[in-house]
Image (cartoon, rainbow, N blue to C red; front, side, top):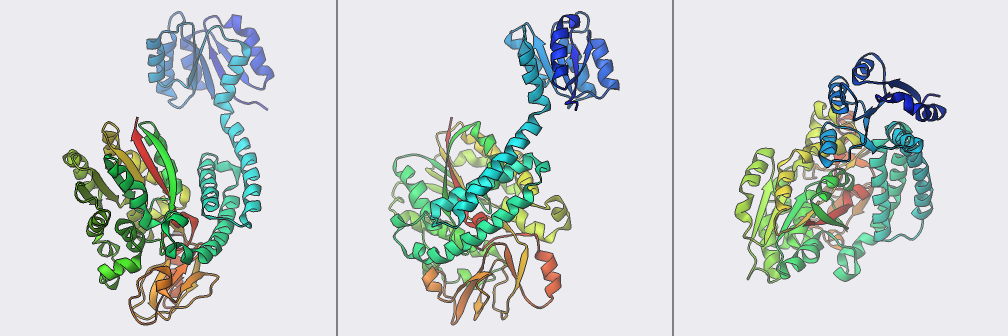
Amino acid sequence: MKKGRILWVDDEIELLRAHILFLKSRGFEVIPVSNGYDAVKMVSTENIDLVLLDEMMAGKDGLATLTEIKAKKPGLPIIMITKNEEESLMEQAIGRKITDYLTKPVNPSQILMACKKVLEQQRITSEHASLNYLEEFQAINQKLYGDLNAHDWTEIYQKLAYWELEFDDHPDLGLHETLEDQKRDCNIEYAKFIEKIYPTWVNEDVHFRPTLSPDVFPQYIFPMLREGKKVLFIIVDCMRLDQWYTFAPMLYEIFDIEIDFYYSILPSATPYARNALFAGQFPSEIHQIFPDIWTRDEDDESSMNRYESELLSRLIQNYELNKYLEYNYLKVLDATTGWQVEKKITSYLGNSLITLVVNFVDVLAHQRSDSDLLKEILPNEASYRSIVRTWFKHSWLYAILRRFADLDFTVVMTSDHGSIRVQNDVKVLGDKTTSANIRFKVGKNLNCPPKYALVVKDPNKYKLPDVGINTNYLIAKENFYFIYPTNYHKYQAFFKGTFQHGGISMEEMILPIAKMIPK
């Protein structure tokens, strides 16, 4: 089986016959030409997979040939072979998008490895990815039914998120469905773990539980401020670990990054998780201070987070940092506001703490539910990751981070909760006061089979607001979502496959927190 067609361009091609025969013996088809003119013509008329191009040739030299080939076939990989080791020449070649270069004299093994790297890398890495995942699959399954703790679950979720990105790069492996099934199995067991341990966590001393939403400022931000460091704290609403992984490589180029993890409280939704983060308190404790937060229209999450700045101010006072700490609280709901913030960000540099809430990822998830166009653009998790990465690359947020890479600030980036693509509906009954959320419900006398949801009959036990007599909560497990019997089929189809939050899943609750120090 032919492994690829290679065009080898060298004005001393006859001297390379042994090299050409060696490549042919390894399954490659090699077409030799002795000048740049014939090379350009060959590329125009033949299907070529790779060009080996001599830099020093009579007539049309290597760089000129390279330019013409790229004009005709921009994506065609080219390996340049040269005697000249001058840095300026290499910069010219790289600037014209060569794939690789080799320095003469070259031996057959060097040429073979270079060709395999270009032509067979995808196949080789795919084969290894497949084998490595199947080993990982077995290891996770063996571990899954043991006595796992919060750290174990974080490790499992990290591995699953890693494989999601690997399979994005190798879509033909056919293992996406296997990975999805394994994620579902993991979330079934994860929900059992959370149901059992969560009441202990929220009522336990902070030193004996994993980091939860109210612990983020005291554990990650305040210690640095006490040391005299300046901090830019960024909360990307609804950002998942796999989405962080997609754009983090852009940040590793300009920051030294340490990654840690914390757990969102329940419900894993903005009105609860982010308020708890800014308050350093659980929702039941916040309710004592601002009792009207959870009594307004629960469809309007922005109004339910209207006290964030005040909550942060109270938290700073409680930790006695207000005597010497100047800070800013900024929330960006759209790109126009984001670019305005980017332009005036330098006016905040005298403050010790800049807190920035970014809503794009959350808005994207919500608007996808209502837009047929976005549903077509974002049919699955892989496309969601891709869009988030594209947005970040061209965003005002990345522009701000590039500026802070040259400033004496430590940047901390995290999320308040993640999201999950819901697939299985559950009918629930509720009166007109019941909240409209898809992954959790708050109302009177709500009930649901325990297979589908955590039923919270005593809100105080979970440190949730008790907003009336017989108030209870339903918090969906795995990838279930709640709908009412009225217009059942309409809403079943409308919400199936949408990205939602507020429930119990690794994707919604296990969150990255990155500490970034400028290089």
